[in-house]
Length: 218
Image (cartoon, rainbow, N blue to C red; front, side, top):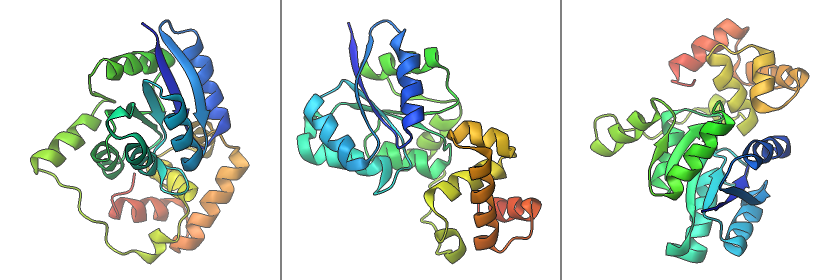
């Protein structure tokens, strides 16, 4: 059986990379892709794939907006969604699963592992990268609910991309590693990092890391 896959990610280079990785996998056919929420909803509704690989952080509402838009349009005929994201934050995982995704894997996954995850969710399994399933289990059993985020003007001033850079900085990534992870140049990473330092009023990377840890970012 061949599973028809639709890719949703706002980075064209990443979409091309995923297409290339899946092209050699038996039983998987990438039938379309989109880089924005409206294009994703329209493409999924029109092409009716079996599985959607879904980025979480995009402008105009991100992955959750895609999930809701497709559900509103075709209801029970919606495909299976598998989140594929750079973020492994508990809040992102739980929000995406609550919105209807069947699984959540990070972009560190290999091509063969991703293909296996596609097949598994298409066949009814729930698939998660290591440790992420625990976030969902704890949330739904009430043992570790994710609280509503407190108002934080400095944090709220960051763009989506700056938040991605901040999370990776807090995890100890170098600028070059961040560039590779996000498919952007080192110079662009430096610009985002400079903006983050300015907006959060931190003097250096060590101070920024402490600031992020205190807010459970990373």
